[in-house]
Length: 211
Ligand SMILES: Cc1cc2c(cc1C)N(C[C@H](O)[C@H](O)[C@H](O)COP(=O)(O)O)c1[nH]c(=O)[nH]c(=O)c1N2
Image 1 (cartoon, rainbow, N blue to C red):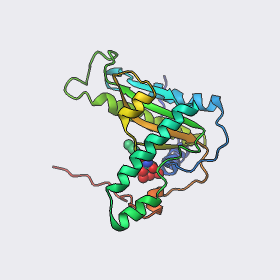
Image 2: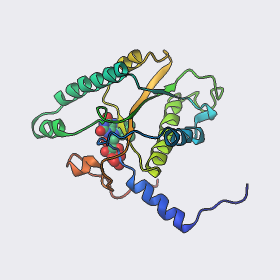
Image 3: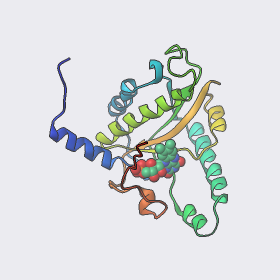
Image 4: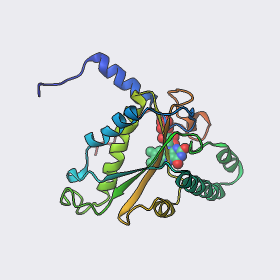
């Protein structure tokens, strides 16, 4: 392959893509074209993974029963999470929209197969969690590609993972990494929704310590 550096224009666009990648909880209900979704899912195969283990596993959550179980799981975990806050924080938390599970046309549960033999254990001997980090890195690529297509992704982790694994009949060795809502976002912003809502602010600078 010939030397491939990228143009200034591309870098500007790529920077914009990263700035406009948002965690989306507010979706329009119109469907997502299968070809577009497939193109985005193909990014998993481009992702780095420890030992080339490619430990990601994806379940598409389609049936009414499976979606209802996931939604109930989220609602109950979110109710529990609310109990962990008090005063103004609790009031603020109760007003946050933390999933688009009721509207998102596409919903995926993504897992890490902790027992995969692929990669022959390279790089994961002392740090088996590297397989899970590999799945997270794949999700990041997927997230960016979805955004490049104009689609939004919302990561839902307010869930009881064991209950979700049981409800989706995932194999024993699969560990839930996240539940993902995908669809057309209602709006586009360069500011995280949690920042707009006054929950937390994004650090403006990366602190690097040299020792
Ligand atoms: C591992 C992980 C898990 C979650 C999230 C993210 C990640 C990386 N985020 C989204 C998170 O709130 C969001 O990324 C930050 O607020 C920053 O906003 P942007 O992603 O830049 O829009 C998230 N958001 C949400 O509404 N419900 C959730 O359960 C979660 N869980």
